[in-house]
Every structure is written in C-alpha cells, then in structure tokens.
Amino acid sequence: MYDVVIIGAGVSGSAIARELSRYQVNACVVEKAEDVCCGTSKANSAIVHAGFDAENGSLMADLNVKGNVMMEDLSKELDFSFRKNGSLVICLHEEDRPNLEALYERGVKNGVKELKILEHDEVLALEPNVTDDVVAALYAPTGGIVCPFELNIAMAENAATNGVEFRFNTEVRDIVKKDGGFELVTNNGAISTKCVVNAAGVYADVFHNMMSSKKIHITPRRGDYCLLDKVTGDFVDKTIFQLPGKYGKGVLVSPTIHGNTIVGPTAIDIENKEGTNTTQEGIDELINKAGSTVKGLPIRQVITSFAGLRAHEDNHEFVIGEVDEAPGFFDAAGIESPGLTSSPAIGVLVAGMLKDKLNLQEDPTFNGTRKGVTHLNSCTKEERDALIKENPAYGSIVCRCEMITEGEILDAIHRPLGATTLDGIKRRTRAGMGRCQAGFCSPRQIEILARELGVDQSEIRKSGRDSKFIVGTPKDRL
Image (cartoon, rainbow, N blue to C red):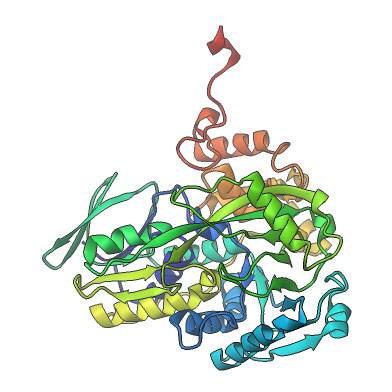
C-alpha cells in the first residue's frame, strides 16, 4: 500500500514527485513508457513563458508566472540548462496594435515584470532578422529557454534519490475505488494506494472520467517542429512569437539552449492520442508562417523534424485538484502550454494538497540538490584533462557531431533512473542529436549499452519495447 501513486513521469508528474519527496511518504510514479520524459514533455518548444498570454485570474496564469520565477533557482539546484533570453511578440499591422496593447495589459495584471512595447526601430535594433514589416512588438525580458529533457530528468532523479519509487513499462488500465484508497490495475499487476495523482497528459481525461460524473475532454493538439543546425544558432537571440490567435501563439522562431534554432509549432487537433507523426502539410505551414515574422529563415539547415501533442482541455485551463466524487484522487490534467514553465509551481501546489490530505511531515533527510551528467563541452581544458586522467573514457569521442564522450554516456547509464535505450542516452547527453542524427554513433552506443546493461546487443532498443535495432544476423537469413 503506497501513500501516493502518480500516473505519468512527464514534467508535471516528476515535479509533483520531487516536491512530494520533501515529506515522509511512501510514493511511487508509474509510467507506461520505458523512461521519464517520453510524451509531451520531450516534444515541445522548450520555452519558459513570461506569463502574459494566459487569461487574467486563471490558474494557468498564476502557475505560469510562479513557475517562471522559480526556474532560475531550480536550474541551479538541479543542474539543468536554462537561459533568460527574453521574448518578442511581433505585430505586423497597425490595426493589430490594440491586440498587442491588450496583451501587454494582460501581462501586467498577471504580474509579469519588465514588460514593454517596442516600436519598429527598437525591435530591429534588438533583433535584426525580424521582418522589416514589423510595426511594434511586446518585449518580455523575463522569458527564457530551457532543455525540457534536462528539466524533466533532473526533477525525476531528485525525487528518486529522495525515496520516490519509479515503475516503468507499467501501464494503468483501470482504477478501482477501494476502502481507504484505490487499486490501479496495470499490465504488471495491481497496485494499492491511498491517493492517486492523475498526471497522464493526453490520457488524463480517461482516468478523470473513471472517477467523476463531471467529465472533462482532452484533445490531442499536434504541433509540428523543425530543428535547424547549430550553424544557425545566432539567427535570433530572443524567442520570436506571433500575436496569439485562436490556437495559441502561432509559430515561433527561437534559439535553443544548446545553440540550435527551433521553428514551430503548428496546432492541429487530432483524435489519435499517439499521433506524433509529422506531415508535409504541417511542415509547409510552419515554414510559411515563420517566414512572415523573420527574414531569410535558413530553413535549408533543418537537421530533423518532429511533432508533439499538447493536452488541450476544452476550457483551455489547467484542471488541478481533488475530485469531489473520489476523495484522494487528484487531477493534474489539461497541462498544455505553458505547462513546461508551470511545472515547478504545479509540483508545489499538488504536493501541498497531498501534504494536507495525508497530514505528511517534512523529511529532515531531504536533499534538494542534484548534479547532472558531466558535459565536457562546458568544462575548461584543465577540467577536461583532469576528468580524462581520472577516467580515460572521457577522452573517447562517441558522438562526433555533439562531441559526446564514452564517459558521459557511462554517466547517463549508471546514474539514478539511468538510460536503458538510445533515446535515453540522447536525452541525457545529446549523443545523436547533432547533424547526422545518430547516423554514425548508434552502433557504438548500442555496444556500450549492451556491455553496461549485461545484455545481448539484439536486446537494445531505440525507445520503447517494439524498437529493436537488431532483428537477426545474415546467417539467420540463409
């Protein structure tokens, strides 16, 4: 019998787990995938939103601003990449200026600091590659960029080192109310718990509706993205938004925390909760839209495209709290943009609810800090030399595009909640994220994983259970 079981190991579930681990509690996170950060949390814009877009008085606005304020200190505590680069919302037509001013007023009411409206010349002085057609822009210096993988993994690792159990490849198929709690029916047997936290992303409506007659509906909203090579890293410095429309903030152009340029997303409502395939129509749409706010977009430098699903709740609002008809069942549902930014604040809010529900006491052994994977690219020459002297694996380059060493990969495999797949290594080290997209380094990574995990190379996967690389030998075909 657990005190709390959290369904979902994305940023929301991991943030809640990390905050919950401050208390003396028997907690578990169940995740149907093989790792943390396998859903929406791995495929998004990686933006730390300032907080000017959400409606005044909404939970979304409150948690967005709180999460934004928390992010810098959290990045230092948990050792993940974050930069406050600022953002610009571009206004292209004078008749749209009232909408820009309304966005400014909304941001001020939401508590966003340092907002200002810049005129044509001021915008171009700040960002020369913005279109010459710009009339004005809303400038938010508190906007930022983050590595979503590092953020998610950091919170999950810190939760794990503070005693939270993680069960992967464990899919919840039903939830049954029991005296004193709940029974979760999974593909790996039944799990009993006093409280449940529903942080299941696009599936959160399924679990909520099992427990409540007040139904919610979540639409998977697909967003296509293009990622450009690092040679474009200085194309823009700020995150360039378009004025928000019916489906959100439009297509953005932004630097990434690791020096690439990202373009996207589209906003296409679909029914398939696993529909992360890109489409030619979607890619064409984002390229055309991005071209309206910047000039000379170096789109020929695309190294990959991908799609993510936003968990769009019909009322475009976070659904967070205890379900009236199922005491002990807590929702963290409808967590779409700005969900990544809001996640630290969501963690504090939901953990506080559980603390009150279960009368939890603080754990005096809680350690809120964590050291991430050692990245040689961020080390001085003296630091690199010392690491290589201590462990020669840090002198062996595996991924040439990103200059990732065997030592970094070993760290990723053997740390808490360590990588068991190539995508797990990629999210922790960036091996395979460069120009060749793992074309050259995959065989060596497979070899290292098999050796370190003590399995045959044929058992190594890209991500989930059905993604084996090796399916036989030439002799098997004879």
